[in-house]
Image (cartoon, rainbow, N blue to C red; front, side, top):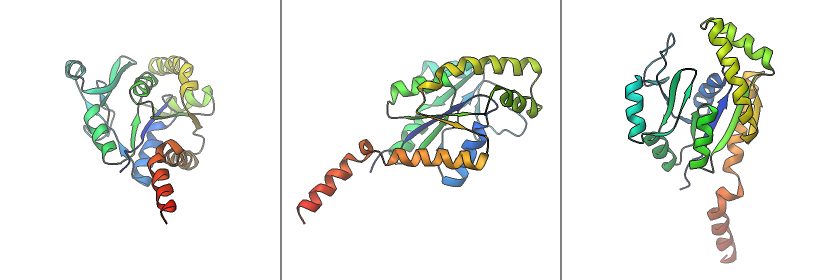
Length: 204
């Protein structure tokens, strides 16, 4: 049995990557790695489902014990990807999605060169700011911080295999799903199948 794919989905805050990921899990059954974070829960978020909410001390303790595949600091908070779940799911042949920031994505790519990196963005900077403001959950100061961070993240975009513009949610979800399916069809992922087919045909 082939190992599952590791899919890294990043994007600017406000681009809708979280919504896209939730739809991919709901519509297509992907395994989602739940990240750990030190930020406070937003209204309606559930510990262990949306994030594992940790204190800074708890998070740093996990870092010391190599409990994360990657971790990063983003707008005054820590985010990390627990190692155990990801590796167990991939070993079962399941495709695992990581919704993480650009710094973490680069760390994952170094450890798992086969990982598929997809970046979700809005149509332009104006649309991005409008989406952030439209949430109604963040102050103007935090929005400015997120826009400044987006400018830094833009430097990493060229290191992603695919850039997907989220101007229509259904189309964006279908596009990302198609990209993941194409990854499973790559020659490098099917060497054993090719060799088995050749043997069977020659012995026929």
